[in-house]
Image 1 (cartoon, rainbow, N blue to C red):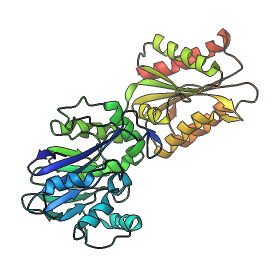
Image 2 (cartoon, protein in one colour):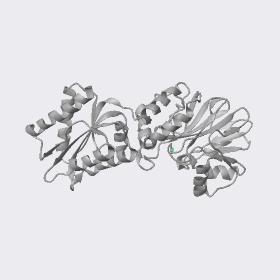
Image 3 (cartoon, rainbow, N blue to C red):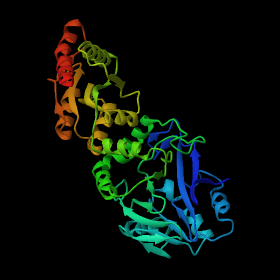
Image 4 (tube, rainbow, N blue to C red):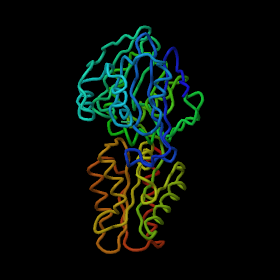
Length: 393
Ligand code: FEO
């Protein structure tokens, strides 16, 4: 495979994975995913991370084509999750003298995965490794999104090798750089909300550490390389990790026989009639929670409606609520409604969620029994007005 140059002796090795259906066996991959790693071919040679084992048959030939018979001097491990550490065993086997740079947490995981404890260079914040023309500086970024996560900064070329941060779902399809690709904000936001979002406070800490770094190029381990406008992706991460939202209403409903859905549509119409136009409605049983989380990460107001199911909310709504509690998304407004045929439970349990997550409720909750006729739907007119009035403030 022909190496792809990023700049002066720095190469990307990128593998497009179009076979995997679910990232981490959970998050849908309709457009696949790319695993990137990087090589610096200097007086000393360095490989920064690897790719998922089995994602390509010829990972070692990519390396050979760059090294052309030279030895690999350093393997730098920014992240140990197996989608990036999968080829480490093959690297160690082929280059038994390779020195491995990582932090204390890296080496604990390295030992637990590969039982490997030799040739280690333990780095901490600010540690520098000189390769000749390139000088690498390490920045630990714990819990973005694993404990050993770190970034490597090339002080010569002002390149940030950022591991998972600033990455995205989606294969590259020949478009390696931001000036070649049609950037898909929604797939990057979905990646952020699903993979990194839980650790947003740690992303903020990483920003603090990076604030004095001049960054010309960002090289993540998924998605495109940012060389034209790295400030764009930094701004997305700043906004998402601060839980900033846009005006608009996200309505999520769980409905067994269409009654709760009818109410959701009625509420949506009334909100639009009240001059709030940015409204999206999703059926939580149809749309995977991965997308719902991503939408929650951008809308400021979230309306949840559930039928009752065994005295609880519908299990598919429960999945969304549980993920939100785990991910601790903040600064959202909330409105709740429910339906039931006898003793209810949908709204009652949504209210428990509201207490747990602490989002401000901006409308009096409404629950109806049975099917929504015109009289019952009218109860939601005030509900919808409260939501739209709040949105217009
Ligand atoms: Fe792409 Fe956390 O691995």
